[in-house]
Image 1 (tube, helix red, strand yellow):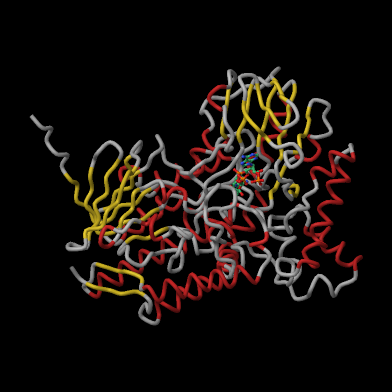
Image 2 (image 1 turned 30 degrees about the horizontal axis):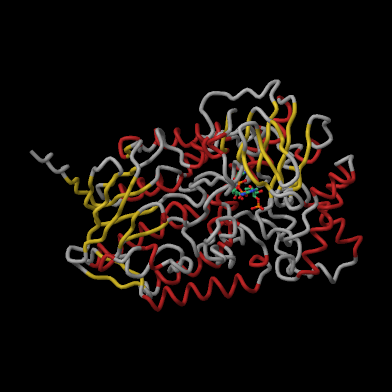
Length: 538
Ligand code: NAP
């Protein structure tokens, strides 16, 4: 006897991922009266902030900016405790939002999506989960996050290691104690740089394996005073508006001069004034910081001076000084005591550019030069960014064409939101949008609002299918590349370029035109009746 086929649940909209994007998408779709379900692989809501719970995990955008702006009441009622919020505090906030707007019952947890296939004849999608459950939906929104599919180093032996292993993006829920242990951390991106100082406080011995030295600035985190919070809340509307029209989604004064036209003393004073203030101040001090190598080098050298000023051992300091990419072209980091950690006698730095990793052994980590015996290995080795989570799902559009096939040479999108040939499929902060080059909250809200407004517009016209045209997609993809090529970003081997994943096409995947310009463009499209989008009824 054959097992009965799983009944198909018919919905208006299906959202993949219950992080900050997916939850807001659910809220907006429900506001349009759409029967919506969110499928989430994790055992709880929160997305990035559910998974990344390593020691020191915190957002490097200020809490009062890294929060939803769609509800003035929510904004006023919620109190943040620190300038930069910890992962647990953000997760509490996300739960508060889900409780307040009644979102929990729209989310199905522990449900990983395996495939999404478009049915041309009906203009609808069939979405199948790994457990075999099937959904039939008109709208399909991938709110799968830009940094959700973690990666390990491409070296043999991980399974052979006899001690404990951790990945920063899959940290255990219970506390991990490193007291008395010999620990290896592989990776010095934002996650490693946040975790290393705290692991060093506990470990008997810590060896940090660095492939690329990164630029990091002090977070200068501090409790948020009641007064500062009340002041921001009073001016929230103006502040949010300034964030929405800014370059990176964080309001900062606009640069007016080249770094090369001011004298070195004045330039130094400028860098000093923004140092440790926020993530973007060093990049936005001058008009040419991110486009002119000589201008950029003035910022890079300022950071190197800071590193040399903190790290006692000159050789270690030089190894920590980034030299192989322009400042800002790999995501800069904010830290709490990262460089000073290398002044501890128990902390050692291994330069993988000189002695590459070769394997993980039963006892530890081997480089081309030595084997380092350790009890624990922490992989802070990052993600298959931007496209990894989409590639993990078998997505097929018109005529059964796989998205993987369409994106074989790198992602092509219209606005980072849609792909021609994949009707009613939307991505929140997809490749080709400002996403990871911005305060994600600003981009998430803009994208979700644009998707909801577009769907509402289609329904008002009596249409059910919205699809970007090939011409619009090509035009936008070319524009993203041209703007990227104008900057220094493509020079770095970064996850923005896909360089951290062997075999991934080398394409600059984010839009650096700025969130303000991007928003204005989207608003103009909507005002003009959505040129570049084809509307139809089924
Ligand atoms: P990441 O920036 O990609 O850093 C991964 C690190 O692992 C890099 O140092 C990388 O070296 C190294 N690595 C990767 N594969 C390796 C290998 N085979 N051998 C040796 N080293 C290897 O990842 P992440 O630190 O998890 O951060 C990713 C992004 O998440 C950040 O850029 C940021 O956007 C976001 N994030 C934000 C926060 C925050 O808000 N505070 C915190 C964490 C993460 P290479 O540089 O040479 O590839």
